[in-house]
Every structure is written in structure tokens, then in C-alpha cells.
Amino acid sequence: MAVRVVRDPDVTRKALTGWLADRFGAPDLRLGPLTVPPSTGFSAENLVADAGWTGPDGPVRRRLVVRIAPITYQLQPRPRFWQQYHIQRILGERTDVPVAPTHGFEPDPGLLGAPFCVLGHVAGEVPADLPSYHREGWLHDAPAPMRTAVWQHAVDVLARVHAVEPVFDLGPSDPASQVDELAGDLDFYGCATDPHVRAGIGVLRATVPAQTGPPVLLWGDARLGNIVFNGSAVAAVLDWEMAGHGAPEADLAWFLHLDRHLSEGIGADRLPGLPDRAATVARWARRTGRVPHGLDFHRVFAAVRFAAVTARVTALLTGHRLVPADFPLHRNATRLLATTLKEVGT
Image 1 (cartoon, rainbow, N blue to C red):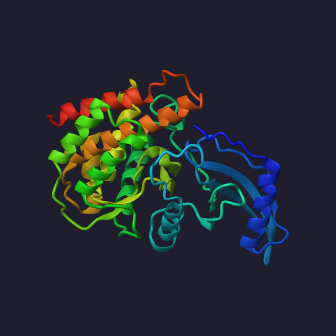
Image 2: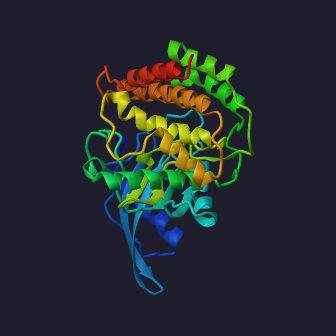
Image 3: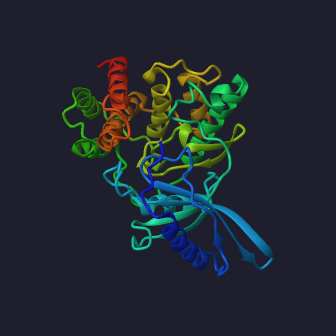
């Protein structure tokens, strides 16, 4: 669901043209119309435009994505917009994790009303959340062997993320402190009194696993909907708004939980060809060389965290009258949280 752009497109385009001309050292830079991509996220504002200029070797053409820090729709208590950009920059420069090219960060809100960054556009297909890729879209229409390959390549790139050491401070990395932080953020998310969320926090505090290795970079929002695919191959990993450090099983559990939400959680049949939980965990373990540890804890953490995020999203959507008052997102998330708690024996 795209963020609604409430700004003068001509003023924005003029401001960006000057900034980009300085950034690329191209005084003749021309910027085409600004558009909102159909699969953009809800929090940050994303704009796409084609830029052209004359380089040392002749004409240059690039499609650019301008990502503007959230103003109205802040989903996370600590959005860390600066860190999101620099995580992508570091991954692109130092690792084999595929990310969009980074072209610059502007911390001064004076130009566009908020800090922003400019990324290169990565062509490809992204599995949709709304409507769920389990119900329609290119992945739904793909043959089963391609769906299998898409899923396997997503798990493989998740393992590549987990080979990256911490980059800079992204909050607590031990499970107990992460639970405390999440519990402290429930008022922000708007679900501090939700009985399922409170029960989940209690289970987490009673089942904190021992740490079995040093913390790694966590994607935070690891899911098919944050990956650009070229065929079945991963072209780029998107969206580091929820990035952190910690046990890599946290990302694995989130990846599985979000797929479950988009199928069982909304009453949709899961697509044939997508490997199940056991096969996914086994493949991730082979790719990381790690014996999965504390998966039940991380399953509950993912379910509680997702329920918290959906409470915030639902409040913002309904509060700005972007969806009907009975929008089922949070209701579905808490129902799946209750199911998860039953499955882990609580």
C-alpha cells in the first residue's frame, strides 16, 4: 500500500534536480516526472524518476528511487532512517548481499521536508502483500518449480545476510534485552493492553534461550515482499527499517511467520511448490552452517512483534481513513499469535 504523496511535484522535482546535479557532478542533469511505485511500502515515501545527463563518455541514463523519511506514518518507535541507508551502502560495498545501488543521503530536512536518500532502481518483480501473493500476482501464476526456486533463493540470501557481522549500533542484541525493548514499545504500537500480546511477552520472558554465538546483522523484515526477483533469482534485498543485531534465528522465524500470515493467517491456501517449515529450516541451516537454536522462542517473538506492528499500521490506516474501520490486519495477526502460543505449548 503506497504512502499518499502530499507535495507539489514541480517544486519537489526542481529541488531534486539541483541536488542530484551536484551529487553526480552533472550540471545538465534532467529529471523526468516523479511517480509513486505501485509496490511501495507504507511508512517511507518513495518516488521514482528517470534522470539523464552528459557524462565523460556520452549520455547517461539512470532510473532513481528517492526514499523520504516518514513524517506522518511512522511505524517504528526508532525508525533509524540514516542507518537504513548506510546498511545498504555497506552491504553493497563489502558483501555479496544484493542491494540497490546507493547514490547519496541528505540529512537536512529543509529540501524535501524530511531527510532522504537516493538509490538506484532495481528492475524485477516483488511478491505482493496486498493482495497476498498466495492469492494472485506473478508468483501465484508461476509454475510450481519456479515458486520453489524463488523460495529457496530467498532463504539463501537470508543466510548471506547472516554471514555479515554487526555494522554499528542498532539496539540490543541479546534476546532478553530485545524482549524488554519490545515490551517497552507496546504503548507506541498501541497494543499494551492486548491480552494475546501480553501473554506472548510473558512467554518470551520465561523462555529466553541462551546465546550460542556472536550476534549477526539481522534484516528485521525478512520476507518475500522485500525482495526484488529477476525470474527466480534475487536481484535485490529491500527495506532495512527493522534491521538490528542478534541471533539469526530471529530473521528465519519472521520470514516463516510472515509467509504464514499471508496464507493461513488471512484464510488463503498456501501456494503449491513453496517448501514447508521443516525444509526451509533445513536449507537455512545448511547455508549458514548453524544448528538452529531457540526456534520456538523466536517464533513467539516474531508473532508478538508482528501483532504489535499491525496494531500501529491499523491505527494509522483507519485514523487517516485509508481503509474501513473493520480492516482485519491486526485481528488476523493476533489470531495467528494465539495459534502460535498454543503450538509452542503455552
